[in-house]
Amino acid sequence: MERLGGTAEAEPLSPEKIAEDKARAEDKRREQEAFAEARRQDEIKKALKLWGYGGRVGGTEGVGYLRGRGLAPLPFVLPLRFHPHFKYWHSRPVPGQKRQEFFVLFSGPAMLAPITGLDGSFAGVHITYFDPRRPGRKIELEDPYAEPRDDGRPSLIAPKKIRGSKRNASIKLLQPEGFTRLVVGEGWETTASVALAEYGTDVFSRTAYWVSIDLQSMGGKAIETIAHPHLKNRAGRPLKVPGPFPDMDDPRALTIPDQVEEVVRLGDGDSDRFTAEQVMARANARWAKPGRRQFDAWAPEGQDYNDILMGAS
Image (cartoon, rainbow, N blue to C red):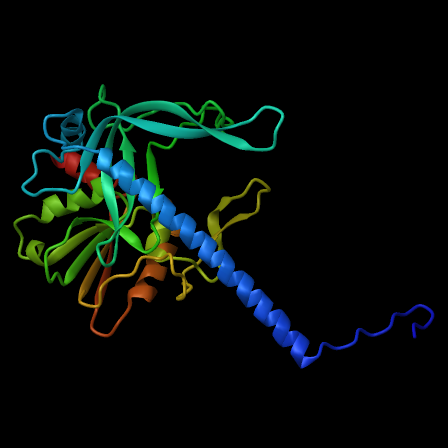
């Protein structure tokens, strides 16, 4: 009975009710995971179809892009394809409705790279749109539905897209059989630049060159966020970024083969160093094993390894 000014205590759940609720929650979790996996597999099928649209790079505007990045001619073959009029799908708000619709913003020349899993299975396609009028430069196109940037300049669309899945997957630019050394970078142009620089050395023949596609895939999920020492959010408080300690159970993060004895992670000097250092720390912890050596190789401030290649060419 309720007393004046108080409430009756809730009756404790029986062991049977607790078990029933737990089983129901587990069934719902499995159902959600199955639905997500079905969607992922459907996206992979669509990405494989898009990859099939790509053709040879030789004799196309794609060679101009590679040459403009100092990557043509090459003494080795990269797993790239070219498409002259690849559609760029974008989203816009539907007037009077609280939803977005997709439409083709433009179509133009693009370089395609395959994203594959640890076992080599196809997972997705990485698309780089470039401007053939400016050799080696990516497309610069204003986003008609985005707010201007903080400095007042218009927002530009992302010149790169991914279709399919990047879950524990990477772009494997070069992968010799039985490799024991791994060089992994964020972008394929940067990673290919390092491969070219190492070509002909005693380490090249035993090195695989992978592209993690983005930094977060390399480091995986963090168990907590930490305050950035310099950057602030819109409220003027320290910006929170993923910290150095990884979630070891993150299934989306990139894993590497046990055979790898030495890892070299490429750090771009044109991204925020503090945030990137946290990524490198998480990757270092996730990939640690007895006898394995790991190194972080940072490009000079304001540059990446393709900038270095271009400066030397």
